[in-house]
Length: 350
Length: 266
Image (cartoon, rainbow over all chains, first blue to last red; front, side):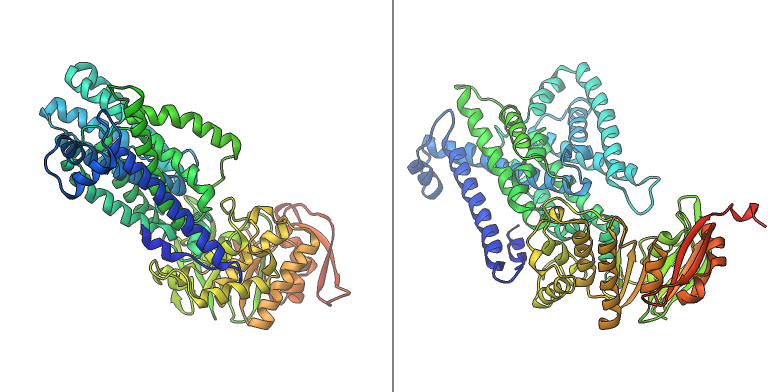
């Protein structure tokens, strides 16, 4: 999303440069944090790999044990983590912007429960067994559930769904799907086993295939998010003002919902339920970006990826020789952190 | 005629508020719509600014149907400031005013020197140049209202629709905002349509007064012709004396007391 770096706008004479360079500095800082998180994620684990060996594996692999660990385990796992983190951070910021609700997360559109139901259904009814199979089902479930929520949110209203109708429809659809999923997993032991690991949220054991499966969805989602940022800025002044400024409200909402669906759906299909990350990250980045989505979205993407990878690294070291799922770590560490953040600076009205 | 409502039918859902209304706005005038609460004046303004789509009739901007023009093109001709708008916390005055440039920007070209000068002009016009970096929520009510008007000004439109721009402001700040409207009209030749509650201020700052009741235009014309004791009774159920404003010579309404609604009068 670096294209939005070019969108900075000088303000009062004299101070123009400082605001712009401060924003770029924050962007660079977030990139640096993410780079550190990526390195840790490649090096740390049940079998620590020193930096020299990582370099060896990347540039001149000779089939040593460390080469294999790095190339076939750590790098795909890290790539999935980066993609899911970017996707959830951006989707969370989009969701909170569109609903003007600081408690919104991508799960509110029904993507989480939609993916869960479709996966469990695929396992039980169609005997899907491979991880790749689950992911396609999860993705499809997320898309269908979100489309359903959008259609329900439209019904009755004129001129597109409103934040309130979307939230109500999302809550209702999620509750309905959750009930169906619960009923199914109670009947099927194998589905239950897959479901409980999926529900915890993890990026372990994902190989390169998963990366390529999810990448197109994330890429299109990020592109739509980039297009959506100026419109979202207009919308944050209220629908009447946005319309007066020449923004097509229905189009802006539709593009936003499509982006959230693709990003949230991709991450939920690949990693399970991590929607707390989407709730938390925009609260971390908003004090840095201010209420400008052209900066908030890229900041949230970078911070989301860094937070997810760091939580995953922590999960690998605290329970040696086993691992703690990243979703568990995120919630265990994230919740107190979030509470402290909210107490220190009151949550921002959107 | 810049802006025209032709036989418009307006409402929300099944509730019809205005049925079959005609109104024309001449170029280079300040028009004020007055009337009791719920008479449809804000609804009419919203329709003129294409924030509300008429269920019947049409709104014409420079002779073309406004709902068939691309909304972004309309936004370059016509600015609308709705009633009591809200901004996200932490938004600075300069940021808010810069968002007025939205219709002139594309996703790949977000800021130009034209945008820069329009924003600075709008800020200096409203006297907010020194407050540009201040968050909107730290300003006084009058300053905040001026910031929103600056945003509409930065949009750079000939036509400006303002819905109760003086609400929640003390008298001095009301005068301040209306003096600004007068300068927009006299110095920049802008066409302004607004909704006001204060009849005496409306009389002072308006070329063309439109009085509404029950979704219909009861009288329209220069304030001196419209603001009569008979009209105040008819539109507001108000007994009042109308005298000459000692400062401007425009009509000055001195309320006497409420009248029973027209059905029980005679």
